[in-house]
Length: 223
Image (tube, rainbow, N blue to C red):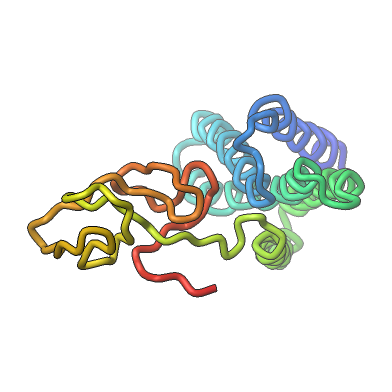
């Protein structure tokens, strides 16, 4: 119980939390509810990789055949339990601090229970699969909730370009310039991709605006 819940559960989950909290959490790019899931998963994958390498050196590479798919996935699922409410706290969601404390405690408990079941080395170890399945369902619910509350939900902008003849702004799908009337044929290159929502100039292959976060579409957008 001590090794499962304290050494593994508390120490490892708190360590992964500190990595996120002391690094990317302060970044302006940590600005959406889904970011907590993403960065917590990244920290979990990094830790799982180091742990798998250590086990491979200690017990042989064959152990990765089991630890790779199961324990790595488990680390991700444990961490998103505190990662998502951490993001909710960052964006100022109501009662997010309470949810975060419960999430961190829940991740430590789930992690400890997972290890405890494995340490029994009996048929009880098979209970890790319904445990993982339950956490997968919880992750799906987090993602659905995140999409609903995200400020970028359904934020779409038409992609604009500059007319090669008069440099006027025109929709990227337009075949004629609305200003000078010239036909935009296949051999005529439009230039200067522009976000139709905020007017930001974009790279040629951009799919999202780097200023307002809108998803870019070359077709007319109807809300």
